[in-house]
Length: 214
Image (tube, rainbow, N blue to C red):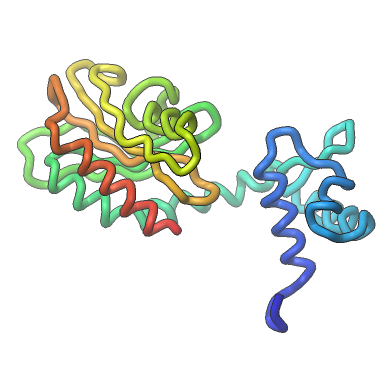
């Protein structure tokens, strides 16, 4: 902490980060221990965050992230899209296929940014806002592969064919090392198989997007 920062705000943000990192919530005692402050301070922090719907407490008294965080999260997508567009444009032009950034939204994969190549005679129409199950399509499968990979391991890229659209193939690689975001970068093309060079190029683009988002 420096003279220019707020200790109370810092603690409140740390509470949100701690709650975001757990699926089962935390008690006042657990938060007190993790923050290194007394229970009274934690009660005040939680009460303030509850007023803004950023935190909720269940019947057992465990604190969890509140629905107010979702309203803030909706404003994140435009910022993420803007940061990812340069790498997606380069990928689309290089490969000659529709490039996309896909993020996890609940149990689904949500395309938040899409760039189509400018020089091809035809390409797959893939729109921002398109949703699909995580276990279908290269974008979702790449995310699931990253979840299952050992810590610090690079899961590489994922290839699929015909899972979301007949005759279309996809390649995607997970975003790695971006705190608070789970997603992938990929391309979709009208082809029976993905050319050999596409997979490594998608991995490169995913790294570029991850760097832009850090």
